[in-house]
Image (cartoon, rainbow, N blue to C red; front, top):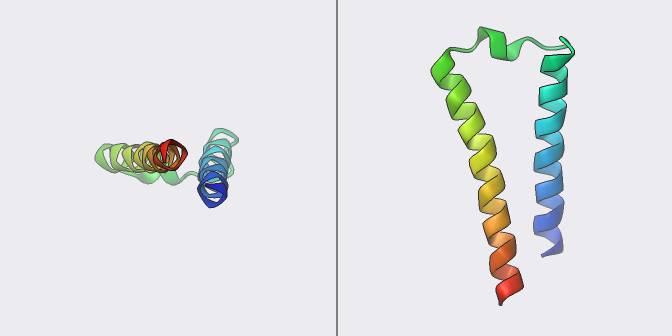
Length: 62
């Protein structure tokens, strides 16, 4: 369980750092991406976070 929590923290930290870099204008990756790739990117981030949470819940239940 501890490893899943650490992975989840790392995943969320990367997401926040990526968002901050875009908001502060440090990077401009998202401006160059087509709209459909932005949706895939967001779905991947959200889906990955959901999978990690489901794995955590399964371990807590057992």
